Image (cartoon, rainbow, N blue to C red; front, side, top):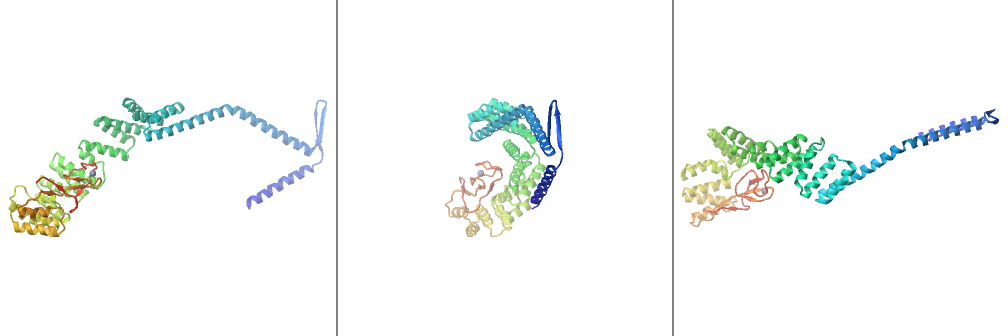
Amino acid sequence: MWKALKFCVIAGLILAVCWWVAGLQGGVTADAGTYRVTTSIPVALLLLGLAVGLLIIFFRVLGGLRRAPGQVSRWRSARRTQAGELALQRGLVAVAAGDAAGARAAAMKARALLGDTGFVQWLNAEAARLSGDDEHTRQAFERLTHNKEMKFLGHQGLLRESLKAGHTEEAARQAQAAEAAYPGGAWTREQRLALALREQNYAAALRLTQAPQERAALAVAAAGKAETPKLALDFAKQAAKADPTSPVALVALARALHGVGKERAARKTLLHGWKAAPHRLLAAAWLSPASTPLEHAQTAALLAAQNPGHMESELLLGQTALTAQLTGEARRHAEAALKAGNKDGRAEAILAALDGKPLPAVTPAWRCTSCSAQIQDWSCTCANCGKLGTLVANVPGTALATTKG
Ligand SMILES: [Zn+2]
């Protein structure tokens, strides 16, 4: 609406000016030597307008001609950049596809078109890596570490090469440099964690993760390797804090408390642990190895009382009664364990032993939540898939681990 109004106003003004010019009286005379030109004012104004228009066009053409070389150069440069970027894209795809020859050809073309930019250096390094040219790969990544923006990728490449060659110290140095180049990167953290695990430096690994299960597993492992009882207690406390129901963490805490002479607190930890989630490791820690079988049976009753009627409580009472040759008690508790849902063969083993037909000893294994492997002995990483903090106590009644009995 406003546009239409504006157009009408301007058109009206132009028409009014043209009307006024057309109505002007008089003439214009120009003398040039013996020539004289005489015309009316409207025609003279029209000719003047034409002359000004021609002059503007003339200067525009002249300016365009002067700028032409620069424009041609810029056009050619843009074309080179475009072709270089295309070569980089093709190189990137070749790297992803594992095509060493394609990546190398693209890297050479990109370098010819774009020069030795950071991206070209990276492509060159990756092409060398795919070709299996270790020396060239290392040199190329080394060069990349001098590039302000791409230095992380340089250290990343050198770290991978160091790991491939088994040079863990150099890998650790590159991991630190990568962290400095790009602080807080998840990839670098994972690499540093893997390196710390490889070196069994659990205390260092513990500083690199916030995941509760991972922290609990690492803190237990660190407590086991701690140089002083106090340090072991610090780690064990961290483990129990990260995973308060983990039998491994609670046993580590009880052991560490025992290590610093806090017997009462150690016993309390095991009692609370049994109340929350009974596990054979808690029972093993509870029963003093120096005691007689009868003392075992009596002490076991104290622990089992924390969780009466639980399948694990019944099994503990049955097993300790069996060892103490309290056959009636052993049978009663084994049958109670069966009633409580024990299906992994431990209750049957007690009954078979009572009948004089011992079965192979059965120990509930650990299960990896990542790969589902059954693992006999706990460790902070899964022996099958290598994942950290993935072992959980086997759910009763699921797969079994049979030991030679
Ligand atoms: Zn696993």
